[in-house]
Image (cartoon, rainbow, N blue to C red; front, top):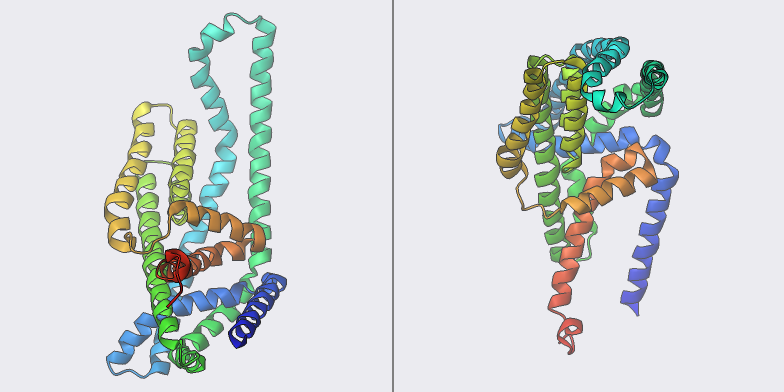
Length: 354
């Protein structure tokens, strides 16, 4: 009876916790980001401590270094990306006209069977709609950027996130010890074992996947820029960032990059050069980065990852995308643990638990 009451209490507590998260989802982003940074950087802080540096100075060094690196990246990349986006929008109509001129000679077998007035109407419509489409795309991109900054709130990122990261990273070991002291003594070893499995899964997937995305972003940005693609830097960074979604990220980047290459270039060697960059990226990701950085030990099936991302986005928006994979990893570990307990229980064998 006591066990049932305790279980009911935990269910109510978790339900209230997730309801509170849902209600406060609009202001949690800087805090979740700070928690993520602290989790990523804790091993580095522990390593600095082992060299003789105290926790607080180590955290100060790490926090300042990371923030300076991020600010430097923003200062360098944002102007370059802005120039490429502006150039892409301005050159959009020219790309559309060039594409029509390239397609038109190969469509004679269709055009020859149409009346001249219909052919002229199709040409006029294509030109009008292409210009409208480019204008609409530009407005949509500017709207998404402005809304994105309004939602993310740059000021909160610049002020709240570093503060949260600093204090969580400084007190990380102390908080873990405090939570460990609250565990029921009888089940503490089991809970610690599950926590270690969760940490291994999160560290293996999130840290490995983040490193993989960073390497791929650099590779695609440099490769596509070297191939002569006007928006190579933008497409490369986007493809690298989207690579944390299995298959979908790489395919989306490939389609976008090849589409822009077809619009920009009129010769096959240049288009094939862009294709070669993406093919090389897939080889690098599939045969080098993923086996070395992520591996198969994390136990997150690609379908489960996709479901988690879509579910998180549907429930919590951008915040849900950030927390989807950690939550999926935790649920996966808990489910595997429950399955192991079930397979050795009397419920599975058909007898008593003994």
